[in-house]
Length: 279
Image (cartoon, rainbow, N blue to C red; front, side, top):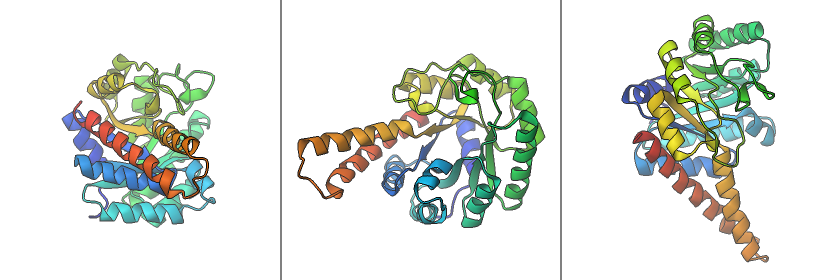
């Protein structure tokens, strides 16, 4: 089927008060697993390719990006293909040219005025191509900037940022952090509700890997819509592979350990999609 507009996917999820699962792809096996999981559950999904993953795959978006687009077109459920955490406007343009229908421009490392101006420029050329744009505010507190778990987005600042830039989705800081390998993050659900009431576009949670099932359900009920997951899947995949290789030091066929790792990712993504859509 054709790619589905992430704006419609997110709007439908927000209206139904459920979560839209967005899962990062670090290896092609992850994309296969994630689409299979979405088809198993029968719900939409977002495949995400980050700038860091692109760097790992030789710095070119086309090879893996084209594979994600092919999987999306062949899927039996709605799929959006999204560029995640792109700090370069040129990379956003490359994703648009390749056929991605959603990008996240990450100008959070810039000063506020430059972030707003550059994000607005990205929005202009993406919207001209019919592509949605996700973004986030810059540093709002914490030693690691917006991605520190102590950082908090101000609802009025968030509303002004959306008005100034025209973005379609907004990532907010409410207590999670990237690359967490444990699930002990505590989200500020009152703040989520306040931002939801102030901001006219769907909200995005980055760092969802660090949030418990119960915390995620509460966040979705409070108004969080797009749920980004990456590290949690890496932890599970690597654990399976490590266990298999430790049990058989003579194993050399990657399919015999990557396959079970991929199956774990499929099962976990299916479980999370069920959790998000039943919230």
